[in-house]
Image 1 (cartoon, helix red, strand yellow):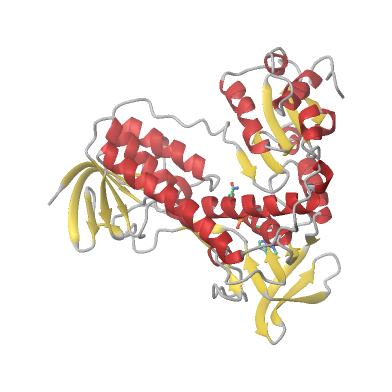
Image 2 (tube, helix red, strand yellow):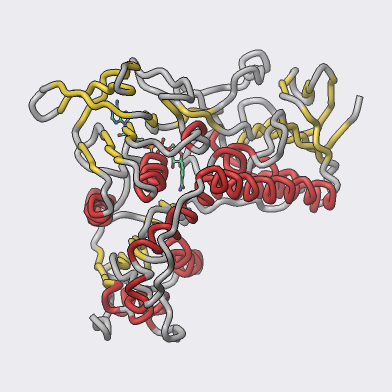
Length: 462
Ligand code: NAD
């Protein structure tokens, strides 16, 4: 029986990062993964393939909407869907092979198969037993559906099926205006599909700063995505005219239906822990299926840890990565720490939406005095030159100390710009610290500085 210091179960961003860090710290490490390739949901059927399709469809949109304005008179750009899918597959393969290479380089052993915890210090994979001083559960999550809507990955798809449709549908009904619904809805809307989004709440993107959410809704509407808000989906049935989705409008109780070629269910995900032997091993699990963890991401059983989507907190690859590193470091006797107050989140629509820290709504509910510094991309030379000046940067700072409490960006490259504020928040910076930092001109980052200036005496270009 092979014996390891650490066995990580799951080779997604949480698990593979944990394994690599553990190996780098001198621990004999193995990572269990049952998929054909490493990288988990994110690399195989999530973040990476969706970003490839978002990139390609954005290019197509640019060619149609902006090329002529820039003096680029190309013959009309046509979509070759099978090539677009092949391009997406190449992006997946390049990334998953990269992780395999990193495992070899760092001497992480890949145990191929689905793992099961067979008691403290023991993991079974493909009929073989392996011993480990420490076990890390990093098994991620799976899509959920709602009552009356059955996913068959053909007519009614989850994000996985939506990223490999045989053809571009003429019409798509999206259930849920969260991150997945809006990103995948954007892909198909740009490629010419009639996209309608049904959302239970009266606004899109739950948890997001309300002002940003409203602007995103308006911009996506302008791009052709129709939002039906306050709509409770009751069920979906395959019919002659595609799949019929029945929904009830919460404001007046009236029932309606919608036909579409394809229905995407994007109503959330749940921890994936099936067959892992958690109950038999005596590992405590919450009502929502997450592994209960205490300080240091330790489970209720000595020597077993859990990270990422399998535990509480936002289901984000980078949160899982940070937890993976923290656990590896604490097993190696180092500090191992995650700052949950500075975890950015990004929606890769166009424009991108990015946020970190508190929203205005949260600060109000905490009765905390704050000030707002806001700057529109309309005042940013680089954004205007790129015909991409929709949106704004909003920084929230403590009214007395000027310490940055949150930042919300809707605009070009928002997902990149947010990290300046993440670093500033890690250092406990005031808005004035960002405002006094020289920013290269002309860059989109100047909009962040201007928002910081707006927290003080005022932005220059507003
Ligand atoms: P979500 O929780 O972000 O959104 C689900 C939406 O569905 C909500 O707005 C909810 O109100 C709505 N809904 C639920 N039941 C409904 C019903 N019966 N009728 C109509 N609407 C209903 O979930 P998601 O978009 O599926 O994403 C799952 C997880 O994956 C999230 O935690 C998300 O953060 C993560 N994710 C993140 C990224 C990213 O960071 N860019 C990308 C993809 C997924």
